[in-house]
Image (cartoon, rainbow, N blue to C red; front, side):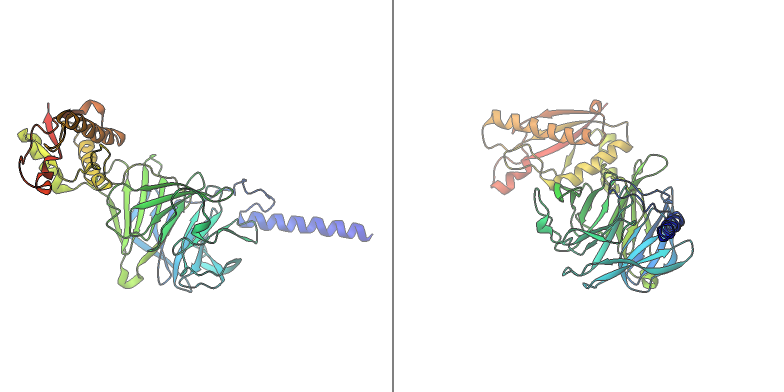
Length: 416
């Protein structure tokens, strides 16, 4: 009889737990980390400001020109993430003690502290959150020394790493002035330095491994970014959102100007984090057209004049571009993509010193490097020809090394 009562009790408990799981929209019977949670995530994107104000930016297909206040958290906040069941998880800012995760429901406008507690640490505070393709959520500290992951079906918080030095592979992640991250469609962690254009990619299945370090294209070495998020909209356009202190800068495929959503920082505070579901990495350059430069190039094309690419720099004696060259080449990419009637001849020149034959060869290699860069980002090869002159057309024949440096240049001619 006791055994029968025990069996009945177990069956009742199973049905109750199943009903609760269905109500919460989570499957608690899946015990494998590679099994995704049910994805019922809507398209709304949220940001949070430091005083704890959660704001809606509209949806991934219809961004709002004005962010709308959704809720006020009961604490200051730098880190939010959005779950597959459309809840917002948040952590109190500027604390290095063990902290509970707070859950807010936009649909019911209510919040509560959860069973999950993030560990204590020595890295300033929890400043960024993200959600992977399986529905697991992540939080990281100021300089990425600590990253944790939560599977919403379980009570435990998994510590992925507790020091950047414990991440294997390649160069070390340098986030001394702060970093932020999101998790792409492959469940890889993409980390960006806030005040530089360096980004990192970490494989987190198994032991964390840093397998990519690169400079992001565009102007992101000159601005401070508090967070970033990328996705593909219904039109299959890649979209990148960058969180600035006073708003969101949005880059979308096929558009030559970014869309900017401003936030009233006097009312709501500085913007610190962004959250959405179904992130997808955007591998295309995020470039703003320089209007003054575009006018100069179009004027030169009309007059059939040559124009010099002022900021194209190569490593000494080599055809390899210095990173300082990317901005001008990126601008040229966007101008050529926008003005599809333009066909160009890239002309390469070296200094007069050195072996003439070597200089001629180097000048050709350098303009071909520029051509390859333009083609890589979408300019048709049929629109670009190249020619090298070596040192045969110097601007300055005599003078010091610094004075003769102007001879090392790349110029554009416009052809029919």
